[in-house]
Structures are given as structure tokens and as C-alpha cells.
Length: 304
Image (tube, rainbow, N blue to C red; front, side, top):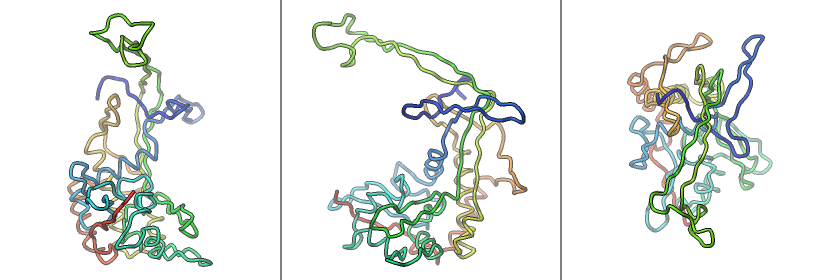
């Protein structure tokens, strides 16, 4: 939306992730605009109101773990915000009714010595604690969680730019007060004084494509009741539509907008509009209530 260039995601010691994309018998230069892991965070963020530290009203009735500071009740984080979700150290080290969450989660997942992992049982337990873990994945890697169960992402997304070209530019940070630096003392550019030129690299592309996948077979493999599976599938679609409807301002210099609607693949139906998905999601949450625990936040205390 802002000019013809954009700033892609970058990685330490790598910068922009460029690659050659095959187009039949030839290749074209391509670029990763937003990674799978970053898109997972953006999809989850559609269901969270950062201004109130509460879930979006559309997902009312879906449980999650809310982490508060012990003694003050100050909101710290939640399983919806943490990179590792329920496996986050802030969740793991918190206390629920006198018991450490590491033990609570292990007990609810049925983790025990010399006992095979029971994925249907664990999936049901996750649905009652935070069903978003079934959509976006969770890895209980801590050594106290026997078997270290892992649930892969059922929803994945990525944004790629195709047939890309570099667009170098630059600028200058100006100092309107200090016109001359003292070379023998402090107050130089390392302290932030003076005028400093800089360069920046942006990119331009023939087209930018976002791709989304919902692994419905994976969701069904957990053996959850049909209403719960329908709720998870609809939640995934709601996140996708919500992200696309709300705009894709990924960074200051990466402001994207839809050039066309989602094109279904593999004979799947078209993606409904946001209002339709919101209504469907509310119905499925109600129908799946028996799978969703109390449907309320699980409030835990973190002492630090």
C-alpha cells in the first residue's frame, strides 16, 4: 500500500531470506516476506485484545491460562501470547491452587513413568486448558514432562514475494543542536550525538503471495468429539479471515493489502466472510462446551 517497495522479515547473520523458486523448467528469485512461525503468532493475535489483556469476544467460551503476578494480581501474560503456549516457563513455573503448573499439566495430560503417550487423552486435556495449542502446536520439552509430548501445527501460513529485485536506499539521522563532535571527549556518535548517515535495503516484487493450510486430517486424528473438531476447523478459518480483513501491516515499511480473495485448493469451499465465520464459531463453541472445561480462564500466580 505504501509505494512499490517493502521490508521483509530478517534473520540474524542472514538478513533477508532469498531463494530461487522453480516455475516449471526455469527459476525466479524469491523472498520470504513472513515466516511460518511469525504467521502463527499473527494468526493467534487476531483472537487477542492487547488493549484489555483479554481474548477477542468472538472466542468467548474457549479456555486459556492467564498468568498474574502473585500478590498483586497484575496481568503478566497468557498461554495465548507465549511463544511456547502452555509449555511457556511463565505458565510452567506458576502456581494453581497451591500446585505448580508443571505438575498440573503433567497430571492432566496423563504423563507417567513407563506409560505410552495417549494422544487422544492429551488432546482432550489441551482442549480443556487452551484449544489454541491444538491449532498452533505445543512442545512439552521440559524434563519433568515425561515423554516430552509434541503437538504439531494444524494451521500454517507463509507470505512469499516472487520475482524480486533489491531496492537499496538510505538516509541521515540529523543533529540540529550539535554541529561539531568533540573528538577528544565524549558526546560522539556512539553516544547518539551528531549526524549519522545510514543505508537500508528494501525489496520490490512482481507479486506477493500468502498461503494458508489447515490440516483437518490432523485435527480429526485426535479423536475429539465432532463438535470440537468443527470448532477448531472454524477457529482456524476465522483467524485467517480476520487477519486478511484487518489488514497486513507487518512492519512500518511493509504494508500489504489484498489484491484478490483467497483461492481455494483441492476442491475445498471458498473462505466465508468474517461475519459468517464469527456466527459459526459461536455456535460451534456452544456445541463443544463439554470439551472445553469451564470455558473460563485458568488463572495462575507467578512469583518470579
